[in-house]
Length: 443
Image (cartoon, rainbow, N blue to C red; front, side):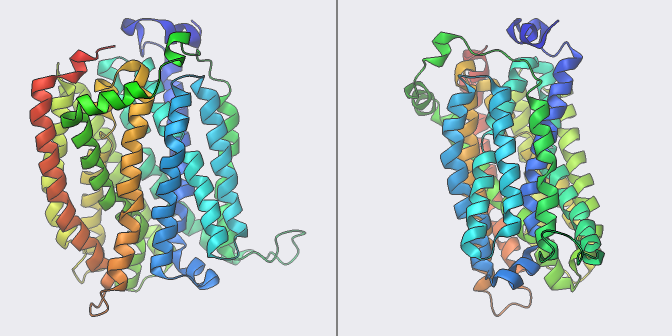
């Protein structure tokens, strides 16, 4: 059966074919590449700062507010297209663009040029999650959707782990290369070569995406206006709106850790980039991957007739366990204990973030799904990617009295933000039980 036929079938045949799982794996691979391209810069903070003469605040702005602003600005129009066109083609264009922008980072000679390249990465990456998650919701039934989504949501941790472990090894290997006889680019620094190399695989993935055969949405769906999306959030704000804000605040913690955690540990414990990548990269990858997969499997098996309720309860439990580690785990003196605690924290955090898109995949009307997911991603970007890195940088720059200000900064953020997130999720859970939007807008 052709893929286009599978897409057009009713829910009873969703997820029945191996093609759907192959497509899910390709989408997950693209998302993983996006996180490698986005996060490799976190391992290269110190050499880039030296080369471009940046402050922590400038680096936070480059990673945070500017990145998230353009991520948000591009995500909503791209999601609008995703609900109205062939998603595989749209995703292919996005992957191509952000990969080229990653390679362009290698040629940045100052803060503004690097900022422009990072903006390009943000714009390209913003089109992938809404289109990909909508594709998964179309191709998988309720029981399989959690597992397929967890496979996709492995990307932040696989990508981050590969960026740290692989990036650290790559950075060390490039330092040993004899580049004096290269016909071009012989004058590039080691960190510039890293950007060139990690950006290239996305161009191959973009070509593979063009092999996916999916259908263009019906004409009546293409003509829907954005007013219906606004009406959905206005009418269902107690569930959809509050949940969006909760995820956004949660991403503030995640983004600040993703951006600054390697640098915080390196500064406080006196280790170099290669050592940090070698030791922390596998921890980041394994803890994040195991948390993501276990959460997806558990919800698939135990979600029952109300998977949204199961998801929200699970998220609350994981955050309650995370809070003491996030608030105090970076304040010790032992390097190996700190790595172990951060591994546990990443396991718990990945369990929560891997499920964060699922409620909207269940409760959003089918013809608004990509746009609703884009709103969720936009809020997460504004509060998370936008606020988290720059806030951590600002706090660190103003904690001159502390021995290790970045470690203390991350602890303050986690200790203050996580209880607020838990309260908002509890509010959402209460009103979900009353409204049951997953049944109200059942596809």
